[in-house]
Image 1 (tube, helix red, strand yellow):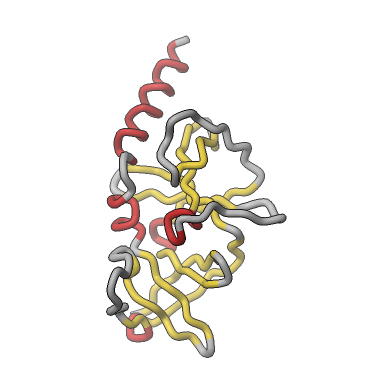
Image 2 (cartoon, helix red, strand yellow; image 1 turned 30 degrees about the horizontal axis):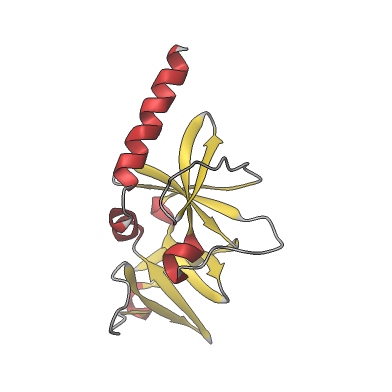
Length: 157
């Protein structure tokens, strides 16, 4: 069986997220920073009237903040009733991969939200289980509830 993935880059490596979990890919969104948020959270963006938390993919993967000269892209993910904007260096490829090409990662201390790696020619693409990734993000449900509450207050004002 083939699955379709959005491919993004982080620190020279390639990662894939199942296209079924992707709402859209955005660019040029102004991030508003917030005080006292977890390290992985860059801030919030307003996209199509919805306030969405922005998560730094580099920080999740490497505990180092995304830095680059190009404007980042935002992969909007809808998983388990939560929408997040995953900030990535770049993304410009959609790729079909056979399930048989995705091999499990059996390394000590491997992130358990890495489903496996796909060998595609001379490329190694780490496949991210976005549901597991979001469920392991500390405080994400609390942040979503706070943002939803803020949107409700703003719509009343």
